[in-house]
View (tube, rainbow, N blue to C red):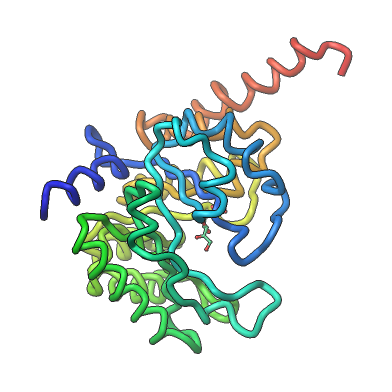
Length: 270
Ligand code: 5RP
């Protein structure tokens, strides 16, 4: 591995513990103005100081993150379909490697839709992006996207993660599932988990905790952070689980309850 690749990977995966809290705000690339993310700049400003990296499209990076802000960028490079279009898996590469370099991306993200109509096309996107990333020392995050008809079990996710790693992805993002340790064992590169749909805070923290305990290297979490009523407390709690090994009860007590109490104190009339 060349120096640049190692350096960028360490920016994403952490230099000390090999773990990461990646903040996902790329949802608009196929969902448009998702609930809670209507104004990306407002969402990002308070959260970025607590994120190890941020995953987003070039449009949101340019418009919503100050260039002076030192947060490693995971740039979404695949897209091309919308939630109301023909098929979400019909993706191509939507930004060039030159633009990714201009934007100082530390990592490139591409979705692969295993078992979908456009599986082959999305795997070719991954293969091409890995070649381009290798040329310039930029790692690739493969997002194992799950179609509506796919079951999120260890057999399917294990298949998707392993294929992504075989294609040369440096990091793979997937979903937590029962027997997650078997998914981790059969994937030779670090795995990070998506948060998925909004859950009660305690359940989302439990998900993060269980994933880390089963061998995940971190989270790439979006909705469960910025759709929370207390997003900053939530990202702090997720950090405490990923980096400090706190239990769900400890983080819930320290961060979530603390923020509830703080609201009461600062807004006594509410
Ligand atoms: C969409 C993505 C999202 O970034 C990913 O699903 C993580 O966000 P969330 O925690 O909201 O699921 O890659 O394709």
